[in-house]
Image (cartoon, rainbow, N blue to C red):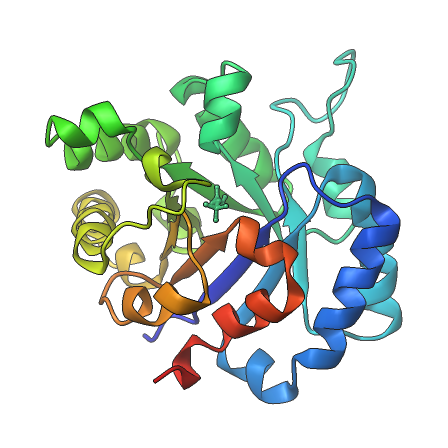
Length: 257
Ligand code: 13P
């Protein structure tokens, strides 16, 4: 079964809701039906923008998907400052990023937190985009595959093969995030291929369906080569997703020479 490519723009902590509306409007009139037929395209704005994005996407019937950058482990309760899966589901979120390296680094998220958040997303009908990937020290030691697979196993502990089939895994080597230093296609494929092999070992044919994205300084001028690799099904795009022309160009990688 052919996997549908996915390009998701992680806006991180950028753009207020007015700016979000402007960016989504620009994307809406630039993308055409052919783009939306060729791949899934998503924006992942800050929480405060999601309602505005929902209103625009629903009102103008835009084929753009959207999601959130994080969610709480619990579905409700006394957790000041948290946003729950049911809240995101009500806002029509298709995706939620879980375990981004910035959450792991600055908010103390460990593998167990990530696993609980994956389960929270799934029980609310939202597709987690589960982020894994090594820092530069691990890569310099040549341990990128074993490190990333350990994170993967921990994140997916207790998740059924049926759910795994619908998951998105994003391989984001930390040294490539926001640095302009993109992984070579071969380096990205090495780990993305290992992720798929590991899913196959544990969950069999779910590996044919689960999508594996690459993230880390993906841009219009490097996306096409990355997308040629067998186990890279799309991208989690940071900085380049804030510029509508650049993001559209990333999503049109198949037209690049
Ligand atoms: P950059 O594309 O800005 O390197 O960010 C990647 C990322 O972290 C996406 O989640």
